[in-house]
Amino acid sequence: MKFTDKNVLLFDLDGTLIDSVPDLALSINQMLHELDMKPYPTDTIRSWVGNGAAVLTKRALSGHIDINPDLDPAYVEKALSIFLAYYEQNVCVDTTLYPNVKSTLENLHRDGYRLVIVTNKPEQFVRPILKHLGLDNLFEMVVGGDSLPKRKPDPMQLTYVCETLGVKASSCLMIGDSKNDIFAATAAKMQSIGLTYGYNHGEDINSHGASLVLDNFADIIEALVPVEESAH
Image (cartoon, rainbow, N blue to C red; front, side, top):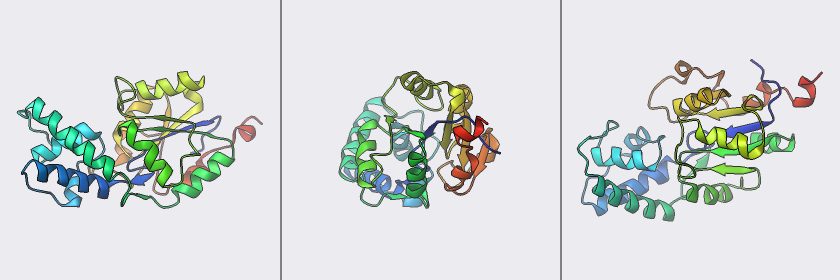
């Protein structure tokens, strides 16, 4: 499949551009230690990532991907604030870019595509990560999980990007690794690319209705017909 008439590319962050699990796991375990709770292996915490900081905290307190409905909200708030404080210190210690991400983004930027981050990660952490990894000059706009009242899978963040940049959803493409990205795009009437390598809780990304599914980030370039070519 080839996408035509796209000039704005919206990217999820965690599980799409970066593998942030090592630093998230470190910070979650520091939080659990402070609360006198047992730590968890990184691979266990990896299975909990992808729905934002609050959900990750609740899963850690529950010790399971299914959140304990009896968690005390005040305790959750305390735990979340502890986790965020630790994560602020560890935000880009062992976080890495996935293969081909930087070169592909640089090529897309050079070719004139407008690049945007749409993530459920709290906004305060996004810019430091982009800066540390040398991506901070590539993105025109960053929308975090706490930037607006709602976030993916709700379409609000995507619609906000369209309104802010003055573009139609049909000229945008959402690129992400989880069903939240695909569902948000579908609700915003936007086409989407699903990536197979990220954090989708063991579910097959093919099952969520993405317009195209790719294994390799670099293949995004091949999937796009440049605007000037698609006009002919």
